[in-house]
Amino acid sequence: MGFPAVRMRRLRSSSALRSLVRETDLRVDDLIYPLFVVEGTGVKHPIPSMPGVYHYSLDLLEDELQEAYDAGIRAVLLFGVPDHKDSVGSSAYDEQGIVQRAARMIKEHFPDLLVIADTCLCQYTDHGHCGIVAPAADGRSAVIDNDRSLELLAQTAVSQAKAGADIIAPSNMMDGFVQAIRAALDREGYTHVPIMSYSVKYASAFYGPFRDAAHSAPQFGDRKTYQMDPANLREALREADADVQEGTDFLMVKPALAYLDVLRELRERHQLPLVAYNVSAEYSMVKAAAMQGWLDERQIVLEMLLGMKRAGADLIITYHAKDAAKWLREEA
Image 1 (cartoon, rainbow, N blue to C red):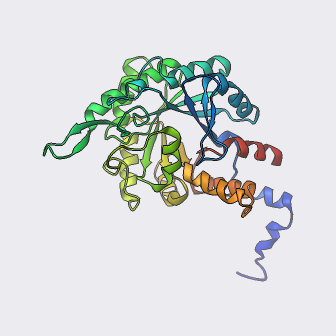
Image 2: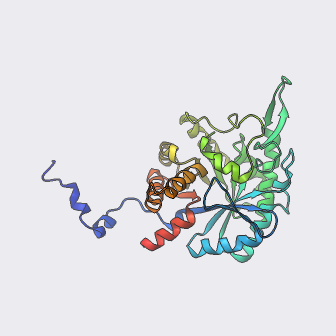
Image 3: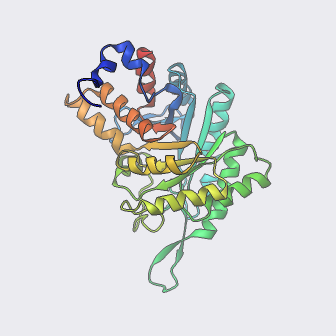
């Protein structure tokens, strides 16, 4: 049976009818707001490649959190930008590290705000890699020592949980990182703290502005030996399967826009909550075009985030979170 018996426009004739049959919803509760915290006082430093995003010292972070909270946001993702860097990223697992102090402050002032701690070493190492660098067996090049790195990543996760982090979000892409972190958390009595694994993290060109913000660009080489080849989908499924077997509580795909097919495949394969990371360059491209007057930022952002939900994401990490939350509440 076809036209004229079937008329698709019947269900589009009014706003109320379109809302009634809408298949996908984007809600404020779906959004996670990433924040960059730094040492010092009185710091609210703009990140040039990410308009509207700032480095915050802890004394000024409270105002930003209050604004986000008032907009309805109930989850933040913390990235630390330390003053001290060394070869083993010791500031990452320092109990007085910037993320640990930020977590304690947030839980004191906003006890019902979920604190998600990014668990990696790249911001804290002087070489900018996500693990410990060791000489290669041939003596001619350096490699990332996977298993030694796991020990420090587990130590970092425990220190973050001890400081009050509600969720540990390991982004390092070392083999076995979920198992190592789960075992360490359980051993220290944090069996209740979930892991939001960066399960599928591609070696992407979309991270450029973030590396400026986090001061985390590699000082030599690249991250292609541990982050994924953008050409691969089947490998992404294997990565996610491994993390599920090791005990993750969430799966994540990063970046989002160029990898919506990966989101869809994971949605059909696994029942765990699925997170899309709307990364820095995806954000900055929209901001740059909006500043030129080439597009309607509000409409573009909401459509883009809705597309991630439609592809299968349950949650979205996005630098647009505060604006998107306000827009969604205005439309409610």
